Image 1: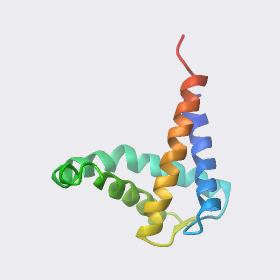
Image 2: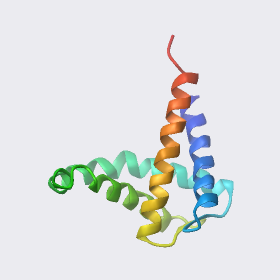
Image 3: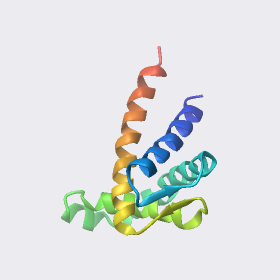
Image 4: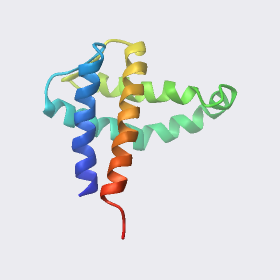
Length: 117
């Protein structure tokens, strides 16, 4: 149940990113649902590999390169989907930052709702 609620809230967060920032466009809630799923899939599968491969650069930049990796995942999802568009890497960077902040808020709220007793 928690995964389903998180997915729906992540899609809503993606719509909010598109509303707040014009560099990101989402055509519909269905497109947002698919995009949230693909972003989550990329973050689960590709992101750990990229983090390990870029570990030296991440260490040198004191972790700031992780923002670039997040932006790449965001931009890659937009590249493979039709109803989700990002106008460039800068837009992907800012959009992924907003989406990450909203994701932290969602995770925090869900942690309180679905706390194990």
